[in-house]
Image (cartoon, helix red, strand yellow):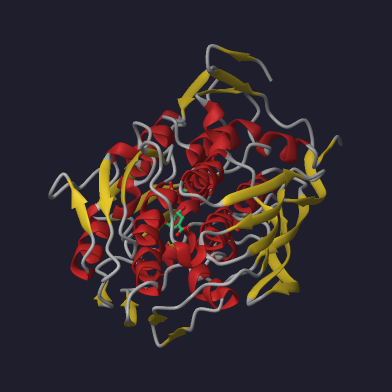
Length: 444
Ligand SMILES: O=C(O)C1=C[C@@H](OP(=O)(O)O)[C@@H](O)[C@H](O)C1
Ligand SMILES: C=C(OP(=O)(O)O)C(=O)O
C-alpha cells in the first residue's frame, strides 16, 4: 500500500481469505454504553468499546459535560475501564460548543440526553455532519418542551436548551431510525410519565436492550418502544460485542474472493443488525451464524462465509432496509458482481448519511462499468459476473468511511489496484480494516 496526498493505492489480495478474525466493538452499542454510563449515578465498567473517531466524539462530549472517563487501550485495540456519570446532579455546562465530528449518532443522541436538564449546549460537527438533517430529532423533542436555537434550525450548529419540566410523549416516527427513537426515549428517561415511540419498520434496538441494565423500566413489544420516567440511572457493566457492520465488509470480501472461507468471531448477532447475512444468502452465498454468548440481551457469536461462484441478484424489501442500512454500499458491490438485477427498496435515507451514498454508489459502480440507477426511492443494480476493475481506477470516499471500505473492497477482490481518495475516513468506524482483511490472506 502506498499513501500519497490523501490517496491510498489498494492492491489486490494475493491469495484467498481463510481462517478466523475478530472485528472491533460495535459502534452503535459503544456510543450508547458511553452516553448511558455518563448519564448514570456511579461508575460503569465497560469493555470491548470501539476505539474509532466516531466513538471518541461521544467520549469527548461526555467529558465536556462532566462525566469522568477512565478508559484505556487494551491489547486487542478496544477501550476498557470506567466512566463515572453525572447521575442526579445532571450534566455541567461545557466551556464551549461540543464538536460531534463526523458522528450523526453522537449529535442526535446527545439532544435526547440534554433535553431533560436546565442547560444550554451548542452542538456542532464537521462539514458532512453540518449538512445532515436534525429536524427529525428536534421536532419530537420540541413537542416534549426542549428548545433549539436558532429557532427552526434544521442543521448543526444548533443550541439545545433543555428543561427539568420535560413532558413525556407518544411519538409516531415517520422514519425507521434508531437515532430518532433513541433520542426520544432518552429524553423520556428524564420526563415524568411514559414515553413511547413507534416506527414504520423495526430499527436497531440496542437502546431498549441496554436501558434496563442501567435500571430504566423499558419495554419493547408489538413495534412500540417505551420507557417510564423519570427514572434514575445507576451504573452497571457493559460488554460490547463485535460490530456486524464492520464484519459485513469482511463477509462481502470472502463472498467475492475465489477460494475464501472465513469465520468472524465475537460479532453481535442482534437480528436488527444482520440483514446483510440474509441478503448474501439470497444472492447464493453460503453464510451462516452460530450464537455462543450473550451480554445482557445482546447475543454474539460466529459468522461463517464462503466464496460464491454463482452470485445472483435479489430483492431487498423496504421493511428489511433498517437491518442492513449501513451495509447497502458493500452489498451493492457484491450485487455488481452478481448475475441479474438486485433491487434495494426504499433506500432514500441513504441520501442523508455521511455523504449521499446513493449518488456515490451509482457513480462509483458506473466507473466500474456497472449499470445502477434509482427508480423512485428504489436502487437497482445490474450485475456483471466476471467483473474486473479497469486499470488505474480512482474512486473517492468523499470522506465517508463506508464508501472508503466499499471502494477498497473493489480493488482487494479484483486483479488491478484501485486508488481510493480519502481512504483515511475508515477511522470513523473501522481503523484496522486493511490490517484485519490482510491477516486472513493465505497464498495459494
Ligand atoms: O442508532 C444508531 O446507532 C445508528 C442508526 C442508523 O442511523 P438512523 O437512525 O439514521 O437510521 C445507522 O445508520 C447509524 O450508523 C447508527
Ligand atoms: C451513518 C452512520 O453513522 P452516523 O449516523 O452515526 O454518522 C454509519 O456509521 O454508517
